[in-house]
Image (cartoon, rainbow, N blue to C red; front, top):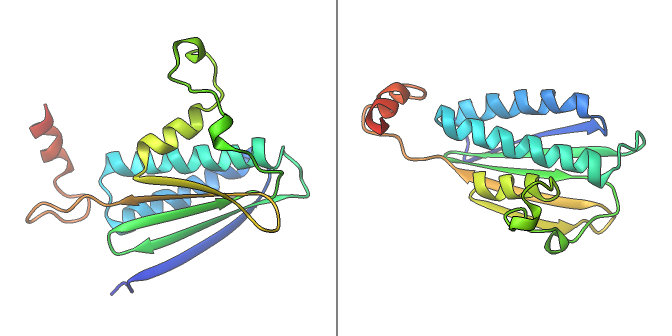
Length: 160
């Protein structure tokens, strides 16, 4: 029996090589909660983008800084908090990646993905420095008789 909320925390060095570890953990957690394959993929992509931003833009690959990742696992939802230890940024200053003048500019695209794939994305400055990105995603309700992972192919057939 799962409690109403569980927490898994991970701290990684500011190296892109550790992102695979984070995404493997994300896959395990989304599977445990019962996200369908498509939702799990997009959650994974959002977490990957957020951690990459923390390493690259937040910590600027500084080996003395880390990235803290916290998964708060609910019965039917996931909240992921990613903290870097860099200077921070103002998300409103990023160029709009959908503006025709910016379509080939990669700046801001990761944040666009995060906002698109997750139900909510919020940013705040940590009082001791760095930025905190908090993202959440609710699991879609299961269809009657559908177990975790079961019925995904049936849903694909209905969509086609």
